Length: 73
Image 1 (cartoon, rainbow, N blue to C red):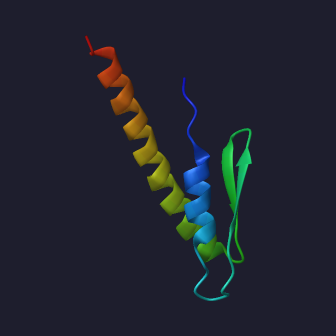
Image 2: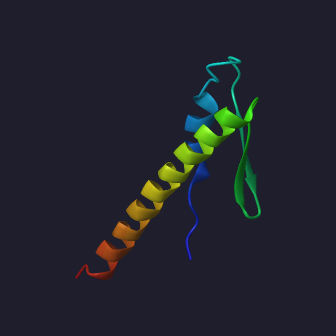
């Protein structure tokens, strides 16, 4: 259907720092989508939630652009 651009999401996720361990996560693209490697489970869960919201927003933006293109004259 369409491909999400994971570059911006990766950049933002990898710029985060764990408050407890002061370490950066690693964003990994997979065949099924993506994965996040982090120093601890609470930090990873926080990042999964954040990345999910970012993907939702990106998908919404892509769909809105597709709809606009459909109804252009």
